Length: 609
Image (cartoon, rainbow, N blue to C red):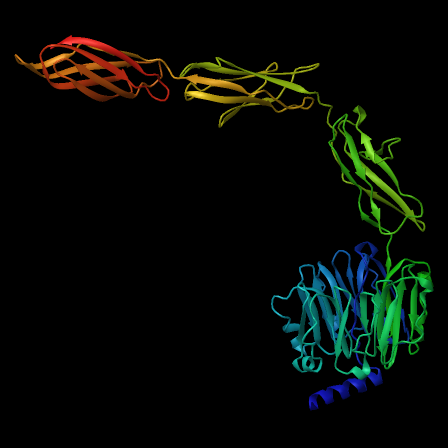
């Protein structure tokens, strides 16, 4: 309790003296298209504030978010750069990283800063006096919103909608986070004495260290959802879904304007001493400042902002910064279609961040030359465009500024193509295994002879041949297995001819014919009654190059009855030997079983033992 009282006393005395470094709440534009230049103004008599409001001359990229505190300003550009400037000698300025290229949000505190990257990681920087802020970001944290509170407290809305807090342990105890209600969050803001979080359903939860200096209770929004929140040390603010605002707290900024019925699109609070200031931007781009009695120059909104498309505002204690939407192309034209004579290309015109003064115009180009009379969103390609690259340009103007946005190029344009037909024939389409076969593809078109290549596909085999005089041939392998397969021929087209594929042709391979011959038996070891061994040579004959390997069955009929199986070798020969054959007359049946590619055969032979 003693620590709590000491901290409270220190904070209160600093606030009264007006020296507490205010935290900064980033003000993003409502959509990337609204990014633009930064304009800052404020107390030019204050050296610190003057440094913070001096926008770098080399900041040329459109800015998507801006944050301001007592002595510095930070921005995130539309292309992800982080820029921080202000009074030198302060850690949030001097130690800011200068190599960030994927930033999506930034937060500033007195002596500290943090940037949110596109992948949800957070890079903190700041004074070594409190390393807990820079060294103790929760491991593996992935966030979608960040804020810096009093001292060195960091806050982040995780991608799952819960809240992460890190930094000085004593301050964390002083700013105790509610034990419930911090789920489904989409944003978090913080200031000297309090923190607010916005839920996805448009409700708000607030907490803090010293309710007497800032309103930690939340008012009834009368059925409206909150779309944006801002926190000052002595007051809070919210933009509601109907574009009105709600302000509450112990010392709210005085003189809230009625905004002439316009909806508020950006709202920001801050404080000098006990005097709060507030800024808002309405849907018509007008900047409204109120409650800035301690810094009169804050109310002197630069005259060149009158009528400008201001999109967001960030209030510092003694200076303010706004984002003025730049007139630029948000998306470039896009051309689609086939760049070929006779085809039609289509263009999607560019889109712009702001409405042009007059409707945007379009123009087709062939190379660097405008195509006369072609200003619509479609273009029929003719012979004059042959060989050229085609693009589309959208031109728009606003307030004296003209932008021409150029599409991708398509092309070069190729000649018109003519339909082709491919006819396939196989000779012979049906034949024995081992026979020669030739596939012929004939490609035709009107008014000419196609060139190029043809792919023949037979089962799982594919080969490519070049057309000669409109035909291509393929000599099929003699080893095609017996059976029926489907064959097609595909012509791949040329510069003036469309591809085509033939109808399927059946290729049937029949098993090769075979002949069977049994030679005169050789008898050995004859006695009066029995021959010890009878040998008969069987020959299987097939066409040249066709293997007759297979099985022969020899069935002997007579006084001795026997059946013998034998294998035919690659040359078609097999010797059948029968032992202990009784003497007499015999008839033998010989059957050749064939194989996968050779037909069966049989014969009979008679002999005497």
